[in-house]
Image (cartoon, rainbow, N blue to C red; front, side, top):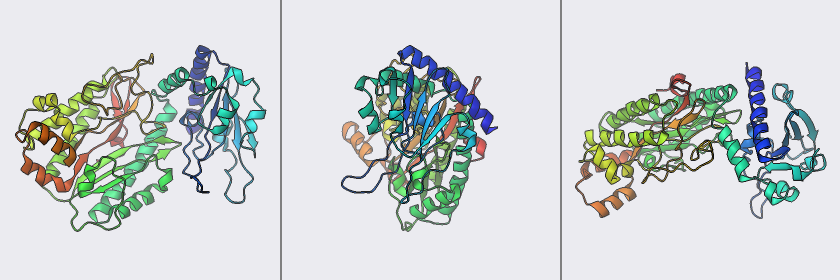
Length: 436
């Protein structure tokens, strides 16, 4: 099945990229995987992340300095860099399931492609950030913006192969989330919960699609909390984990929040979970994601009003900007080869699609189409800096500050799933894995 899906995926890639090349007036595209970067005045090499345009063709996530040449009506040509190296283990020989679709030239030299291009560089556009590209191509041929934008637009509608990879990435992450929840219930520290997550998905940190957020108590109010305390807090009150997995470079991005005990915070978590599933279920073709984002603000403001945290109507909370104090980020984003995947803020003609006024962090403003995969991740947080800014500008009346004080030790709530847009609705790739 994988071979059939992958073969169909490459057929689609060849056809669509040929259209882009013809429109751009170029005869070929050279896509470079990327070159590892070394720390300043050191021999330490940073964790390698391959060019996503390269990964759209090949599942070679740990293969720097490979190069791929795409031409209309030609078999893709891959320079597969396999150095003679006794300091590090070189990449294994190419696997047949993907290599059979390419003209593979194994090389021990990282820039062998420069001497073997079948066309003059003036007829080729190059994609990537490897220093070797800048040395070989004129500036106008390196990452031309109109061409890049068109290729990124193509990536917003996933093939069956890509969807299958993302299904598997969700399944792996869902199992690891369950392991992490169990570690939280056992009273583990943030660090040990993270280790439990890694053990479940059998991955290292650098193999995950992004830096996992593993936050206990008030740390869950830090949107991209980056630390992992080695010691468990004296009292476990709340736990937020935002973590994913990757399969053949395709990502999942899942968030769950748990309360340690019944009470006001646990009620808010349950309310947010219901709210999030309602929003995810409303995803369909033709839906303007900006409207769904604004709907999320109204629903979250309603949750805050019903729980007594705010003293104004949901409509007033949204109109005044009070809802953004508790929910300052966007409802979601495209996901695929990149966690925050590309082309979320332009239409199919490349024109900018503005964010709603007052919502500068929304990453997706598109009208949804079949094949899109996106996240739905409403949140609610007690962020002191935002609350104090509101208080200084608007006074005390709209917020029950005693309720805020009761919730502050628990931090915040975010629930996030990955949702596929279908021809007549949507499929929640995360919930179908059985993750509540």
